[in-house]
Image 1 (spheres, rainbow, N blue to C red):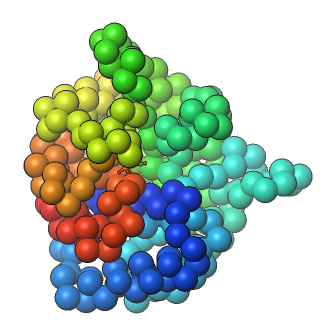
Image 2: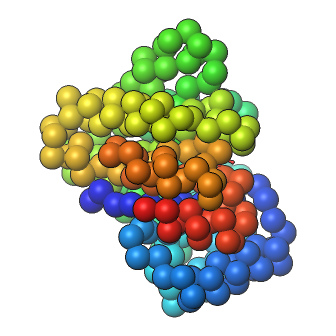
Length: 252
Ligand code: PEP
C-alpha cells in the first residue's frame, strides 16, 4: 500500500546509551507533536534493535534493520538472517544501500537474494537504488537505476512486489549536503513509477511507495515531499537529531 513515510537510517552511529537518549527524545517529541500523515520507521544498528523495540512498543513507530543476510541460516559467522529479524517482529529492512554496494561490493543479484529472504519472512524490504555522480554526468542515470530495479526486483511476482518500498538515493547526495533538486527527484521518481507500470501495471505502480534519500533535512523535506511521486524520505544524518527527524516526518 502506498504510504507517506519518514525512515531513519542511523548507519553505524551512536553508543548504546546515546541510542537510548535519541529514542527517548523522539518518543517524548511525538507525545507533543503527533505524526498524523506519515509512518515513521527507525532503523538502528542490529545490537540496539531489542532495546529499540521496548522504546517503541507504546508508539506508532515501526522498526527496521539496516541489512540482512542473503542466506537462510547456518554457518555464516557474523550474519543476521531474515528469520531472526522476523522473529523479533521487525517490519522493515533496508537493502541495497549504496554504502553496501560500494564498500561491501553487493551486486544486484545478491540484493535480489536478500529481498527473497525478507519476503519469505514477511519483512518489507526498503530497496535502495541510485546513481553515482559520474554516471549522472554521463547522462546514464536512468539506465543504471533501470538495471538496478530490473535485476533486483523484477523477478518478483506482483503480490511480492507490492510489499517493496523503493528509496531513490543518488549517491552524490548521500551524506554530502548536496540534495537533488525537487525537479531531479520528481523526474527520477516518475521514471521509476513508469518502469513499474511497464512491468506490473498502473495499479501496482500507483500503489508503490517511493522515498527520496540524500541530504534530506528539516529545511528541504517539505519541498521534496510535495512532489507527486515522492512519498517521503530515507534519512541518514538528519535522523540522528530527534527534533529534525520529527520535523521531517511532519513535512507532508
Ligand atoms: C542514507 O544514507 O540513506 C542517507 C540518505 O543519508 P543522508 O541523509 O545523510 O544523506
